[in-house]
Length: 350
Image 1 (cartoon, rainbow, N blue to C red):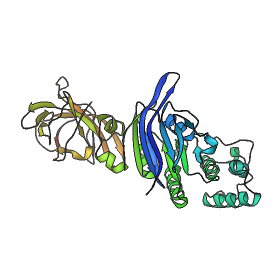
Image 2 (cartoon, helix red, strand yellow):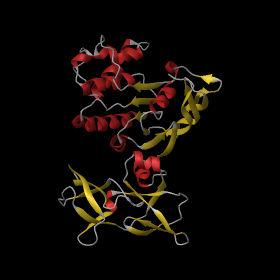
Image 3 (cartoon, one colour):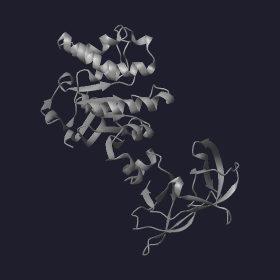
């Protein structure tokens, strides 16, 4: 696939505060990218800078071969051919569904406006709602109108700021799947901001994890979750629990843990290494010396979800809130024997 969007060393400072710092990012034609990261990390600022609502302090941005941002270049938002859907949809309350959708294509002929309106109304299942006002629509219908309005000018890139956050859980998945199919059908690239990693798996082809104004890691969601490149990425995506390690034998790369000795593929450079343990690599043994106790229990579709902590809390190898799923019923305070299944150990510096 050809590259549609290319961002190089993009930096943004607002009121003398650095919001984005040296962001590098690319997006292929027809690709959907999910931007995730903690609050205040710069996700929405990046979206607004791409759209042209915020000026950069450094860096370049190219869309479909056209330079939109550089030290001596700034193409205004209305000339970028970029659509944007806001978290609250920002529909005009005094305009009907039809008037909202054609708002951005009023320079086209009446016949072309009507053609695009009818196509989008059909694609987005809005037929029969043309003369209604936003307050007469459900949340899902309002979102569809916002999507139709953003797609009417046929943008090269669609930007979405937490587009599913105001939709109830039952409808959210259905809308995400519908919208993904629509974007793929129309071959429109998209970038969306979310705090929910599950939305990325449902909606996106690629994920970019941000922190403190920079992009830490990009790639297919499954690959990033299997191979996080830092503690920040693994921790934000909640990929597992953290268990401290202590160096035991430098030459043989052996480390001590609350579960006994483990051997790493290579020596870690960290003075306080943290082992990332995913729930599927924890084993509950029927016999042995107890090393953990049940701290919290909840019920999920995967069975009982337990949080364990170490029995000995004052040890430098003690762990807290170790996540584990099981069909076996335990009680708060139960002491258990946990063991780690053989797997490739992921170790990071916290």
